Length: 77
Image 1: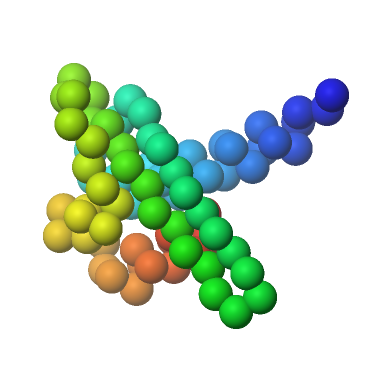
Image 2: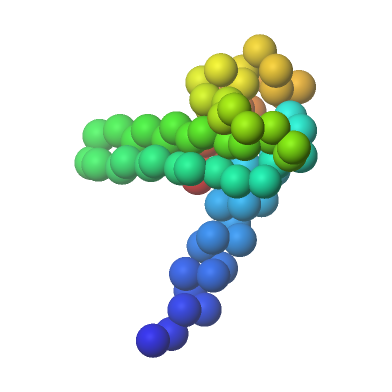
């Protein structure tokens, strides 16, 4: 099984997540859905050395980037 394409996609997703998660993290659980008319991406991330996950829609106030950038980045994921 050739996994190079999957590895490339995962790397691109990780880069986008690093652009919007405001702190070092250990684990992410991601859900993304795309159809003909819309897309949606949500995720939970676990900050390093913490047990409780942070919901992606709860990060907007914590993220140090403009909302349009945040929305564009999650759309690219």
